Image (cartoon, rainbow over all chains, first blue to last red; front, side, top):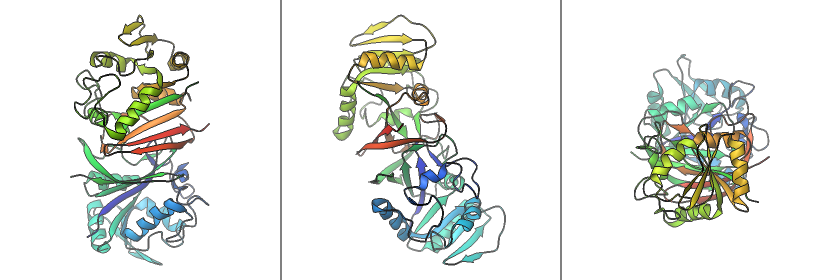
Length: 203
Length: 203
């Protein structure tokens, strides 16, 4: 049985996207900076499945995530903006889109998209079933990632800490619980571009 | 000539203190957790100068900061709460307290306290002069650290990332500028307790 992983690139001030996410600015204004480690050539465009232009240990982190992922959970905005960007999808696996607006299932090259209207817990449960022995990757946006953590559904947090202050935008970790939530750091990968920090939620 | 270093222990969600800082909770409710790496035995109490109970590489990071620091800048609340806690001061160097309320200079065992009423830039300038070849340490609270970064007075940021979510409190890095502020990671020290990340502001 796989685990549920929330994964995001964040600025040192905790933003996983800039403000005003749109087709023009898929990661919000300034937010493309957060993915330079993954797409060093061209910002957020032209994402070939399984190969991004990342190099060295950045590429190794991306490749491992690619290999580990058996299903993906995303929010509706990420889907709506992503489908136009992703020539093929970044993860060719069953993908569950959390949304309030029903939508027919969609097959898109190597992935299938299922639209889940009864909440994030249902989306994660369906994704776990679809992932089999592999992991569920919660790709974002930040609101969906926060909901997964707040509902205590995340087993692992993979933070790619990018050495920049964004000053504004969408915070990944923003009041996602009460009391203290303890984690254990299980891995650190340092590159010139970022610090990849893997944590396990302690329960 | 030394540099100006903002240094803080922060939770994964970016808080350098919990809410409701007081004499009872010097780092806010729950905030003592952030200093466990430094004071493993007793939270935030009984701080001997230059020795904290930290061990291994955590102790090495603390010792280096101690050795590098020639002057300290703190806010008034940190001073007001700190003087009761610090039997001797943690840094036996000239310390500049940014405040709106004038106060006579005070000598306290190994340190002298100067109260600066004309702003954080003046406090940093006075601290730089007093530090000589050593560095200025901006110890907090978060508001003072934010002001120093926002005024572009910080050369270095030393983040001790503690594997916990605090969910509420005082954010260290919160709208401290505009546009993108680029930094370069210059050091990573990983311990069981924390990840010590040193960054240089790029100008």
